[in-house]
Image (cartoon, rainbow, N blue to C red):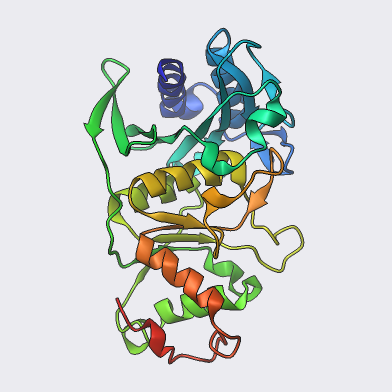
Length: 316
């Protein structure tokens, strides 16, 4: 954790300098999942991998590398990491972050990472925003540490953090509405219909397109985030990775009293089939996530986009 924090503080400084040092938003290639890489993606990956050299991290799996790397054959832990989440937003100065997941190490990288997500022993993220914060859980609640600019140390500023149970906010990329499965369209229709609809209240939509920023808002204010699979080519399982994005965020949410599913089933009940496997992702305040699951259980006539009187769902 000390090495991770040191590398995170270093990256926070690089981000704060922005184009003074170099153009961090420069396109430099494509990662193993087919997503474009920015200069900052590669910088962050190199900083973290260098930070863990000689540590007790045995295997290192990154979004930016096709295969896991063995750093110390005698190490006890395996680290999966998205070194720089949200890098497509770096040129517009939107909060970005680092997401990480820690597992007990097996002899081989496959033994360490291709396993039940519930085997996680620690997870967290660093958000590089107006304040740089580390949000982490070791399986006994969630803590928040804030980076002190004068000392470059992370100081505990929140202990046993809980996701608020109620909120009027939801986050989804509404431009993909026509591609969503019927239960997701029905759920969003009911929110958008506001006080005149079955929910009988108005809601606000948020969409940052940075998973860390979305997770941090929900951690602080509650609400729900949805990135469903859809009917576009290559999007059947959404676009978020199970190992180093969804599983660690799900771990944090559950430790903070919230929930995380693929729309129907809990993320932490899934087994990770591949380093870069994707999954639909829904997380946030427990009641809201449960409601999305309930929509998936409705008959097709109930989830029709034209059906606006779903009396089962009139609670707040």
